[in-house]
Length: 158
Image (cartoon, rainbow, N blue to C red; front, side, top):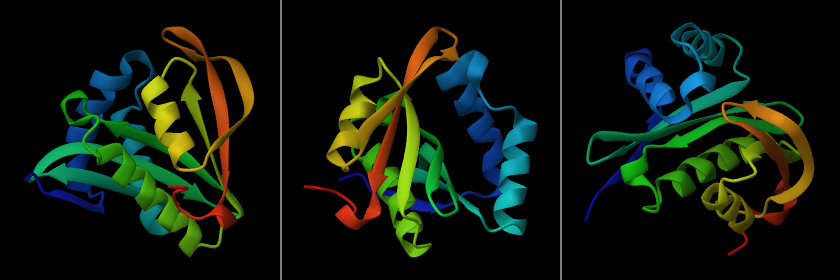
């Protein structure tokens, strides 16, 4: 049985994360400089958390959340061969737990309108669609669905 482990992202992970960004998000990938800046901010500002998921010591995904009065999911990504194996769900649960720990009122995120798998995961976790951002994504051009979860409802509805 594969072992899934979540941990805080480290500087040593940035090369792998930048490569995964290019693979998963191509033209909309975060630059290595932005990734490094975000990781520095996690340590200096203490207003965001980034985690990585490993399956049997192999990098499988990563995620980040900004924590204020409400929380904003900044990124969540699972490599294709680790999808539908609980990695995305575990990452999302870690972000939600961080938001609960910081007493955030709600968690917000944007997701591609065509990303049925992610939308199903977010709905399972109790997120509701609240708005649409037209042409939010540019490569390819696509709307984003804005989703929100009020944290009083618990981490997962099931």
